[in-house]
Length: 246
Image (cartoon, rainbow, N blue to C red; front, side, top):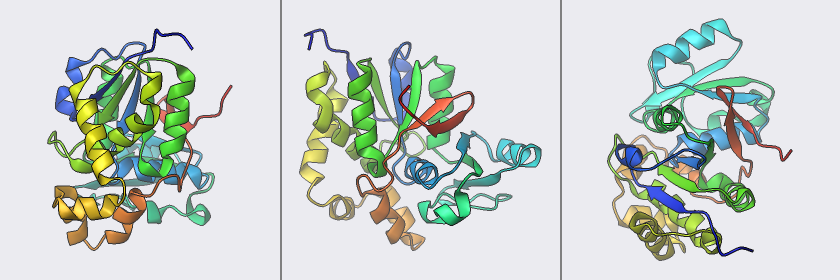
């Protein structure tokens, strides 16, 4: 392997995305609770594709023009005017197989559209449920990477940072990492790795508390479980599909 390794950066909030050059770069959209966990799960369970949109209005409009399931959340609850929410448990194989899911979320789908607007070379989505698929893809591509945390309304959050750290912890020897936020993310992940759920609880993580308040502990535990929906959602032609090596 050559010593000329590609660079890897982590942006802890969408508000920091403008600091990074995304051309010829793979951007990993990370929204652990729950958008990217739900996207991986729907595709793993046989969804034809997931169309990420950045507004509820666009979601409803698309739902009227194509045969699809319209879904999304705002502030952790099913968005008004949509049929379904952002819980991975809403999309079992019996329901989602061969269907198109149009999804809008508070943070994750917004960040994906920001990365598109900034000319990202490739866009994939990552979460603990598809951790291995993400890591294997990034190593195989040998391209620069930006791990993009969706955060919460631009405020840094623990769970997305933890996932970035988990990726870095696995693949760091394949990349040049001169990036303090990447080092911070990995340090936090190493400290948390024995019990991610317990760490979130102990640190009083804001989104953990928000979802727990809605009775969604089961969602949180699932979204912190590695490789339960181990496919790679890859963005092309306006939709996320399962990446199949060509």
